[in-house]
Amino acid sequence: MSEDKAGDVLVNKNKRFRKDKPWDTDDIDHWKIDKFTQEDNPHHFLEESSFATLFPKYREKYLREIWGHVTTALEKHGVACTLDLVEGSMSVRTTRKTFDPYIILRARDLIKLLSRSVPFVQAVKVLQDDMACDVIKIGNIVRNKERFVKRRQRIIGPNGNTLKAIELLTGCYVLVQGNTVSAMGTYKGLKEVRRIVLDCMKNIHPIYHIKELMIKRELAKDPKLANESWDRFLPKFKKQNVKAKKPKETIKKKTYTPFPPPQQPSKLDLQLESGEYFLKPQEKKKNELAKKMQAQAEHAVKREQEREKMFIAPEEPLPGQETKKKKHSKHEDHDANESKAEKKARKAEKQARKADKERSKSKKRKHADDD
Image (cartoon, rainbow, N blue to C red; front, side, top):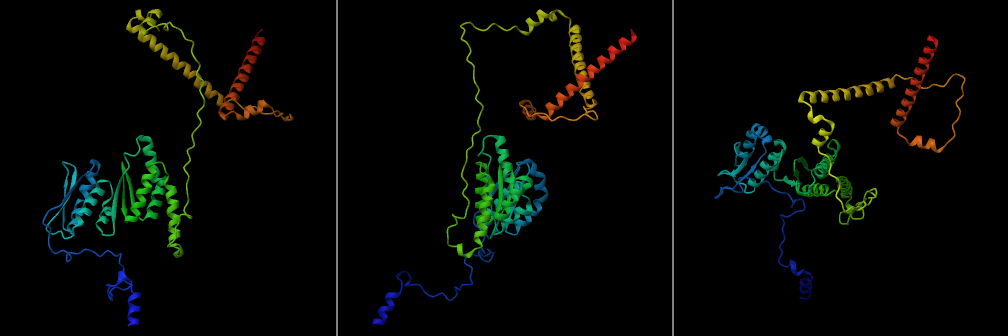
């Protein structure tokens, strides 16, 4: 009796009525999702379920080409689909052959992805049991259009490198199109993609999340850290708001006068003063043409002078003349700070002056010879 009592005490109260399960062995994967077949649900549905979605005009040509493949893919699961080019919509509905109750939601996701520019080869994978999808709306997060475009481009990165890194680390397919980001993969991966995309639109660069995911991937390989917190290994990025210093503008206070400013002469008054008002339309046209021609001539002279500067020879030291070392001065520091373009312009001016002096000297010599 004492032995029986001792045995009764050792048994946990919560597990008193549990029976042995000889069929439940360690080699069974409890997380495995078994494929849903027609044998699991031999009866058809009593009600018809349907979903419809609109698609943009630029997708019409592509959808028309691949719609045959879409119908064949959905027919295998007993789902009917229609493409309405007049309204610009796609719709899916259950039939009497449909056996899987969840397939209509997967068909809805398929047409949603097709309308968001995901290619059919990729979008059709959403009909599989181990695949899920997520369409992230990013259009209403940033108001400024230029800022929105820059941040959206940040998700893609240079030559699409950032997007490739996100796809490799999350194991998801990601497509950035217009005001949405379409993603396909496991639920865990989709959660990470959504976090990266939304944070990027809130001005947090994707590279920080990519670094974090890379560290997590390495930590997952170590079985010792399976039941430990990874916070000490993950990087902590502090937000820094560096404000650009604006130059202080000193506003000069104007002297107060009780009298209003004098009225400016109108265009008509100016024409009356110059006498242009009394000219005939033909004369006005002639004057305008003459001004235009004069401006063109002045511009041509300037262009010619700029071209001549290219043919002026640079200064060269004479043979036997030693170059003296110049003392360092404030003037030299000022020259060093100047830009190359300013130095070139100054050199060209000096050379032009020299050339003018030489021409004037040669003219004086000619006049002297003639005398």
